[in-house]
Structures are given as C-alpha cells and as structure tokens.
Image (cartoon, rainbow, N blue to C red):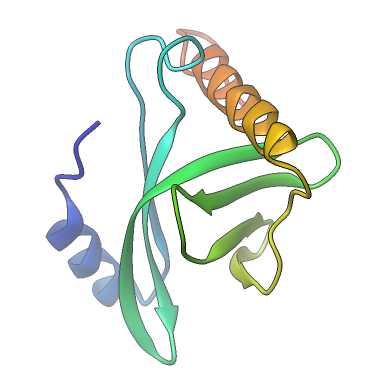
Amino acid sequence: MVPMFGEQMLKAAMATQSDVLLLRHGLFPEALDPAACDVVLYLGGAPALITDMLLYHHPEDGFWLVPQRVGPHIAIEPDGLRVAEEQPYIAWQERSDSLCRAARLIAQCARPGRSF
C-alpha cells in the first residue's frame, strides 16, 4: 500500500506523453482498505504526480479518484482522466459507500478469470 513507483510513473508519462495510473490495494481491500491510486497527469503541459488518491465508484457516475483529505477530484472517463471542478458526492456517507463499492469491485475483478 506504500507509494513506491513515482519516479517510474513520471518517466513512463514523459516517454508516452500519456497519463499514468497505478492502483494499489491489499489482499482484502473491500474489508480492510480502500483502493488507493497514484496518478501522473498533465497539468498545464507538465506531468504532475499525485499520490494517495482513493478509487471511488458510483453506479451512475462511474469511477473517480478522490483525495484522502484535500486535493483534486479526477474523473476516469473513456477518453482519459479529467480534473473536475466539483466533487462527485454530496455527503460523506455517499463518499464512504462509493469507496467501499470501488474496493469491492477491484477485489472481484482481480480474482483469476475475472475482468471488468
């Protein structure tokens, strides 16, 4: 669960001129930990590493990366990552439920023979 690949992510982003997302989770993320993400995205033409984002999923809004405390909210869209002006949730209970749902989905999809 510790961020370890920041330098490699920045190199990959610069080499490919693309955003890079690394998902980190424990053995049983839906029960113990939310799924954490590190992301490199281009802000103002330069790659920026943002660590310790949490994977969020809402059935209608899809997947997002939300900060653990304060920071940007990033929508994961079919054509890439988008920094949003507003957060995807209204109440903290909705945020908590959606973080748990995302971790559960990742755990299910990470099992052998499963996929998104």
